[in-house]
Image (cartoon, rainbow, N blue to C red):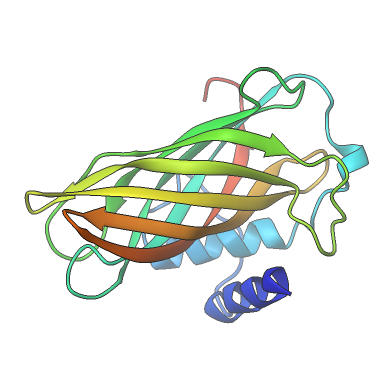
Length: 193
């Protein structure tokens, strides 16, 4: 039920736009929506059609609704994700960095770790992978500790793209703790790209 609600929210937020994205993603709402739409149009990959060995690197964008100021605002940044389909010691790692949004510059990056691929996932109801997201972001001299979970799906033939949600996000500064959420989308690039 939660997955359906999250999907409906993402679809409602992403209506319009569409088309292919060429060149590197632009960290903006327009660029994010175009990338997310193009990945969604590829369809969710069947788990049986995913590689069972090798590493795939993905590059794309993340959108986070962060309460760094008095109210949550949208921040866009670069997503880098590596997936070890052979299931090594760290099957999924990456970063979200270069965040841009309203107000002062944002410094720092969020680390993606503890990744898991769910081989028995049912494409219509389950996410195919998950991971932890942690790190510190600094804006206007204030440092915020963040933690969240990411959940997503592989898209296209053989998992040539990924997309998903950032949920259960907590952001803290001093004694205050607030919540945040987001989404991400990325395409596979040549290894080391």
